[in-house]
Amino acid sequence: MDDDKPIIEQATDTISGAAEATTEAVKTAVKKVRKAAKKVAKKVTKKKAAKKAPKAKKAAKKAAKKAKKAGKKAAKKAPKKAAKKKKKAKKSKR
Image (cartoon, rainbow, N blue to C red; front, side, top):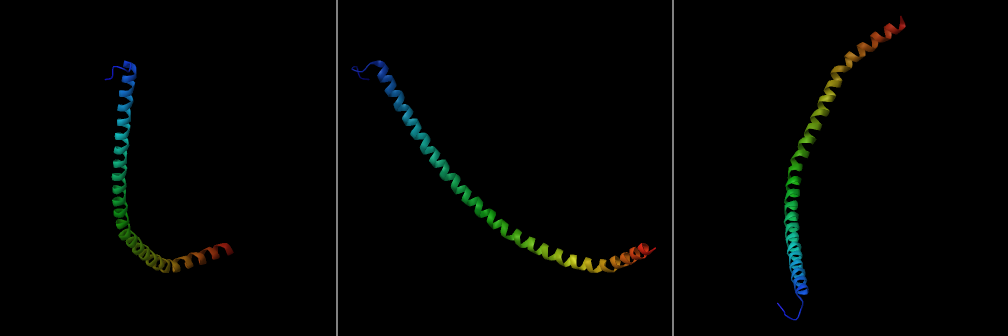
């Protein structure tokens, strides 16, 4: 400590120096955390993309199966619908 400076000035200097040091340390820590978060985010997005590819194929297959089944169901229901329409037509004529 300097004897030339008053005690208050010396105290403020040391406090401001400590504050600057802590802010710098915090900034470096934040930078490191951001870098780590970016790395993790990249890994996660790659994994999600890899998982989505098989899911898309499965969904396409399911859609194709549903389309086939829908065609078959429509073919089965067609005669029944025709019969119902005939009944309704007869009733409406009465």
